[in-house]
Length: 194
Image 1 (spheres, rainbow, N blue to C red):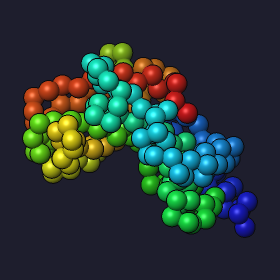
Image 2 (image 1 turned 90 degrees about the vertical axis):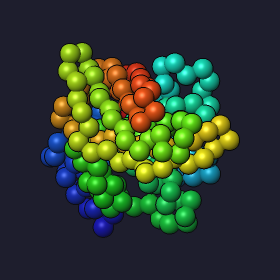
Image 3 (image 1 turned 120 degrees about the vertical axis):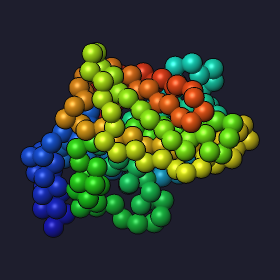
Image 4 (image 1 turned 180 degrees about the vertical axis):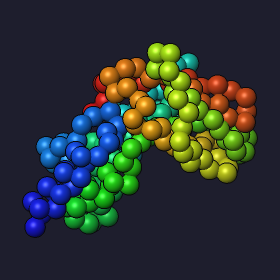
């Protein structure tokens, strides 16, 4: 039964549009789920580090720095497996199909922004530039207020770009603006992420 579910999930993925920057196949799904299960006890920031790019003017690369995380299909699968394992649940091939279907058609960036006021991220905007092409996100998921931290306020914002418009083998420049008037720039070499 597990093999049939995995086969159906893979067929669904391979016949649909490209999910993000890396192709998905049975080996990728198994590797991602194994990675997630093996990292269930690792702190989230450490787990996400291989998919993280810091703001180009960041002085330090720590929890206070502004950063973005590229949610590739591999990372989505690994994060789901990590969360399920940490909760004591079993990770199955059917989970992979559900996770990938939920995010099908998007390249997703989770951006951690820092500010001096709780409402600094009330309105955020982003653009993704590759060469002469500039894209706007199809979906923006932003909080109403930021969380207070020891160094100010932080907000987690998610930008969903149509994957059909993003060249997976090129560097992308993600520019994010918030109500505080600051522009944050992140350089993401898409081909370097699995």
